[in-house]
Length: 217
Image (tube, rainbow, N blue to C red; front, side, top):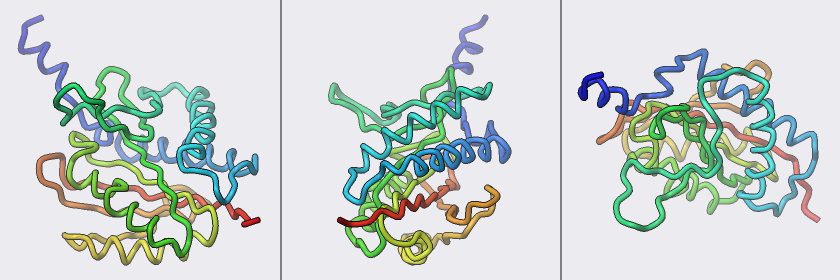
């Protein structure tokens, strides 16, 4: 094998583009089906931290993934190496579906608390909470799609979506949040399309709002 051929093999690929619409649907379906399993366990409480919810959910993510023969693998706490410099610890994505061969080819999933009426949650979700990290190419630089998951521990997902639609529209570029019916029977999935500089653009963010109907004690 010539060196130039070896270099091409090591080039990062856009996993979302490789998967195509059907492959992305497969990823989203794994996420949704495992959320239903977690919700049925009724272990999420109104004050359960984000990382704890994600840890519990990821167990079912693995269970769903293992039942299928897929070209990608779920990775919990994925380090982001693309822009990392120095000896310090790189930032981490909550989890991703990663190409088995290439560490920079992945479908990222970031999870944030998004309770109804909580402006702190909304501001963090939109800013440093990761919509901002996707748009700055801090995350998923070489990929054209990723996901955000909002944990709606209390309140209604549809009300949260109305507020999220406004917040997305206020971003630079005037992106729109639109409901997506890609998963039959699940109404709380939305997509926004964003322009980016310095990475693959446009970039699609799939927003899944997971409602848990927790009761405050």
